[in-house]
Amino acid sequence: MYPQQLPQIDPDLCLLASTTISQCQACVSSCPHRAWLISEESIALDTERCDSCGICLPACPTSAITIDDRTTPPLTLDRDTLDLSCRASESGRHANRIACIHGIGLKALAALYRSGLRTIYARLGTCATCPLADREGFWSRLLNWNSALQARGMPLIEVTYADDTCTAPPHESEETPDPGRRGFLTRLLGDRDQRATTANARDIDASPESPGQWLASSGIDGPLPYLPVIDPLLCTACHACAKICRQEAITHNPSDSCYRLRPERCNSCNLCLDICQADAVHLIYWQPPRQSRLALKSIPCEACGIGFSVIDQGDATITNRRCPICRNRNTMGNLFQVLN
Image (cartoon, rainbow, N blue to C red):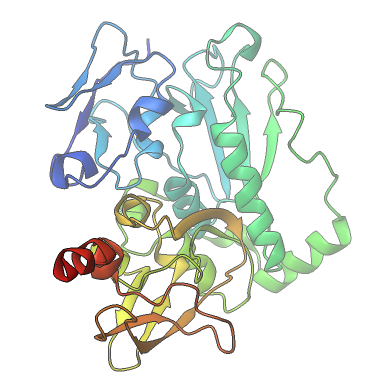
């Protein structure tokens, strides 16, 4: 029988516990059993509803949720293959046993790939009778990861299914790999069968390098998991997004008078969105980088005359020439009081 362990939250990593700005609901929205409960005072887990499926773990952007896995070995590779079996499957005695395949997040998938993963042998039971069968979590992550790899000319992760297992969702590509291209990539990378026979995803996942940083390190432009985008027409250059970003995906460089955007560092915590009062920051997913530098310039406020920063849009007309303080003040009302 698959051992069930309840998830735990690290308050030092949890966004809701560590900042009052965050509106994160990732654990709540991801849980298929509605076991996570959030109130103004606390975050609680309904232990009667939780079945330890682990789907909330990859949903948390800061990896604040963990499950005590002392009774469950970490995912390991046999050369370049991950033999995977979920708790709904009766086969795969020697496979990596997990509660649910949707509990494998992007960080774990990327860590396994960096260690040599190229094939997943899946024994997933009868998905038609599984209450989690309609979820796309893992399949969506794998599809997007493979798309990012393909854009960079890197080998993809293939999936092979056991005879008694479910099939991939219809939206997943079913193209047959080109044997010529695959042979070329095999020659390029060398014989992977001569590599070490195991890889510990848990140890590799402890690396500070994110999946986006690893993809960006290839030096080839392509899709990244998360991309913060600043709308120059709405941005008030208050620097709040840069100050609150813990990953330094958005930074303010005073000496260069600009914002620097490094989307490969983003972990989708959404703090920049939560703090932006102008709704100028947005997050897009699995797209090539759009912004890397936004120049700032100083202009005088038409109300108080004090200089303030705006996004430099070249010859574009600046529609709002009041500083953030004057925008929030009724300056005409004050003038009326003075005249009276």
